[in-house]
Length: 54
Image (tube, rainbow, N blue to C red):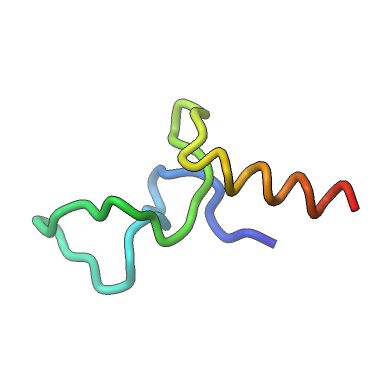
C-alpha cells in the first residue's frame, strides 16, 4: 500500500534525482512519519484511517 512509511535510511521522502548537497524539499515525495514517529502530515494519516475504516 505504501512505500516508505518513515523518513530514515532509504530517504523515500526525497524526489528522484536528489543529489547530496541539494536543498531538502519542503514537501515529501513519500513517507508519513519522521524517525522519531512524529507524523509528517497528520491530514494524510487521517485520510488513510478514513479509507481503512470503510
